[in-house]
Image 1: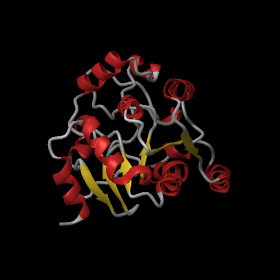
Image 2 (image 1 turned 30 degrees about the vertical axis):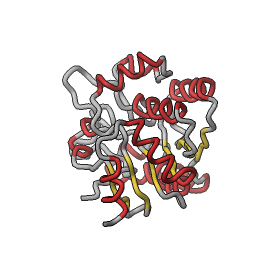
Image 3 (image 1 turned 135 degrees about the vertical axis):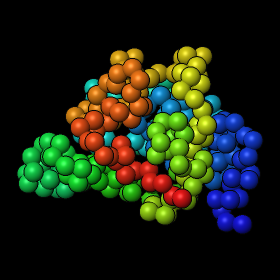
Image 4 (image 1 turned 60 degrees about the horizontal axis):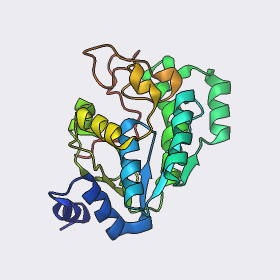
Length: 234
């Protein structure tokens, strides 16, 4: 039995805090959690704090985040007193991109947008999670058709790491109830129609009935609304 199949079997029937406790017992400080301070990530941070997890918390600062994201970042530090290590894009790569194509090249084509995402998010992520055994994320199945095709435990061949999504089968209502019941700090943009929050130039509020990811890269007609951090593995 391979490692992913073994973990799937061992966490079968566990709730989110049970899964995180399992990861903490099995992998300890060899687990890493990436947060962008969305509501799912805030719930996971709360659960990690409740079990005094040894997992490393990290975040990616692309240099284009909303002021509200920095606000909830700071509130999270104040509330949970857990260190959150920040990773940034390579300065020379950002300078080269902006000097060559301008500050808003991501609007020009999907290829240009993915180039920007790679420089500001994917490359820093690869550095951030390198060497860890397990990567914890806040992905939920219902967030998009693309994510519905993922698995709650996966092997990420690109990053050579096991990915675990403790909230994979949670509904949005369950996430929001957890926030409310535990007074978890969250990004105020969520109350203004932003279910998914990324870089400020690439994120807008959505209208009633629109897809969860409709506010991300809204000018793209044929994109799967992913930056490349999370790939389908099956």
